[in-house]
Image 1 (cartoon, rainbow, N blue to C red):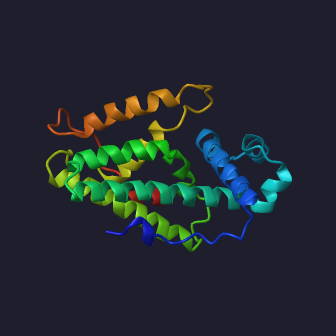
Image 2: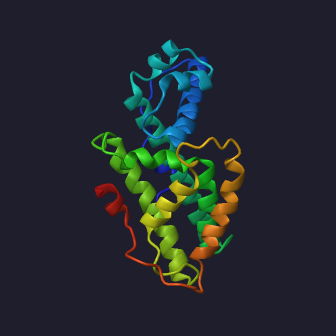
Length: 219
């Protein structure tokens, strides 16, 4: 299993401490706005929420695509770290296989995994050399979590990695066009209901076919 220390290092410019803080604030604000608005990322609002001027934003990121790309890769790395930590806890006997999956899901929600949706959108630059490695590391870690939970007999057999990813994205994003400022307080409650539905014994048969990660990327 890969560890967090083995992940590809993002190539960032050498920055002063205050510039690093500005960059981190920009990325954090953009992450929230990606969750709220998708790929139509309003850069003026990113700068406003980050507490910086537009000129500062453009010094760090030349356009919307570059900023979105960096946010998605950052979230991908953080979410994968959580998955690998959950796997390590299960290997150490600190939790069950399904307990590891459950802790990962809640940690991924706090990282705003909904911001990963642009990776499935055609305008996103999937040809960038960092994207395949980051995506593969994430999907491999989640696949290990689901495989172990399934092998333990705790996870229903008809649920795939792709479906887990879709559900996480959907359950951690506000409804389109809605103004729900307290949405976050419901997220973990709804995730818990979802996770309980993944456990055996199975009470119903799922219609259709399981969605894979390849299906999502292809469509």
